[in-house]
Length: 176
Image (cartoon, rainbow, N blue to C red; front, side, top):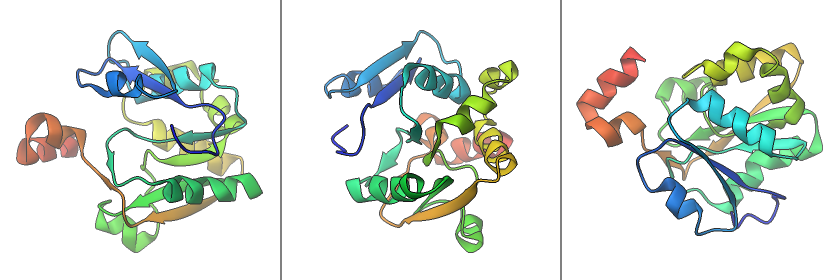
């Protein structure tokens, strides 16, 4: 919320049981609450409907080490040209580092119209895990250049590991 390049910051509490919303409310941001967990696609849709910007930056809440420079690097190309950027976090699966991009990362910057196009399909809002694939498909359909932005200092904490422990969480993630 302290990043100087944003006109607005919207946090969607998707029925979480942790203190994310309470922490977010201590900052000058708009917090929107879902009474129950509706899934990531619904949270992004809620934020999109509440937002006014022509460029949308999506950031997951489970990051460690995120700095202004990371957001600036993610946003800069989208301000210069019609493209989408994806983060490549430090502990992303190795195969994505070899490939040079993480197609399922939650951290992205993209034109608003790309997200609006996705949500023209009502069923997308109900998807629990596939929103990144829909975003990728929309960007490719529009012919957007897709750029990967390395974030060597940023790590994510898998939700499954936080909730269930490393082994059980890893199994649940694989099942997903």
